[in-house]
Image (cartoon, rainbow, N blue to C red; front, side, top):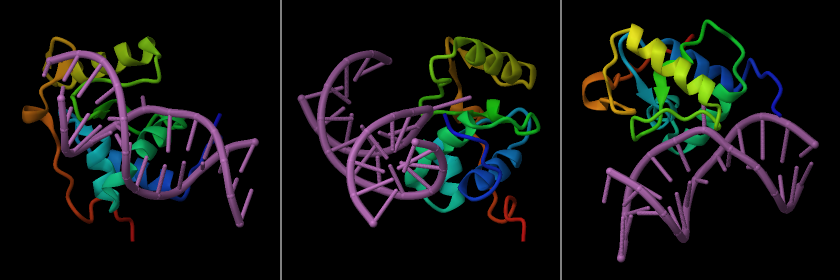
Length: 113
DNA sequence: GGCTTGACTAATG
DNA sequence: TCATTAGCCAAGC
């Protein structure tokens, strides 16, 4: 299993996720795009899988279908849904209404330089 | 330095 | 809307 990586690609992922405000959600692809590479959506998920920093709102990151992923850990998926609902995100069946809650990243927000 | 893995996405039927 | 296939690329070993 991947060790904690607090720098490099993962660090950027965390920085981007940090810019997502409460009440909004984003997709792995969007985060990847915000990083400059729309193809690295899988790595975004991987970065979050290795995440251990509670300050990162990982629960606001879902897949392009509006569904919650979670490596098969239903516990985490349930928590994620609960957290989002508390923030005002509307769930329709088992999916988030991306049209209403998808967050648009602002260039420069996650850039820390 | 090369192969395997993977919280994905988009396209196709 | 669902199932299958192909592509992409960093991190780990």
